[in-house]
Image 1: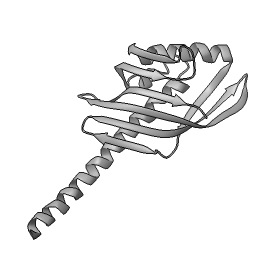
Image 2 (image 1 turned 180 degrees about the horizontal axis):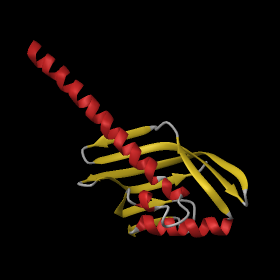
Image 3 (image 1 turned 90 degrees about the vertical axis):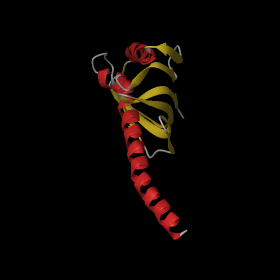
Length: 154
């Protein structure tokens, strides 16, 4: 019985760092994905687009509000660029705060994290605090990719 307990404690100690590393990896991908907001050109958005699964779904507050198809992230970025130009919004930066949830189960992950935005409207500094980003990710042979994301502003 004592040996079993010792083995369980050792197994838990080995699994703990692996789970922490996976959570760190997932959050790094989500952080990179938020570059879609600050990438107001297609070239600037390349690294953020690389974090997206080809089949993804995005829900946000710009028209058409939902993107769900192959290439959804690229379509979202294109619409975001158009909306930012219409609204004279520049210099967008999304800052992730302390995550509320980072759940990793095998090859799937779920993240809920508050995000604050700073930006300029017609050259004047503005900010939006208290938005929430919820994202689902899936791990493939090339790493973690965002399969769904929703941004809700406060």
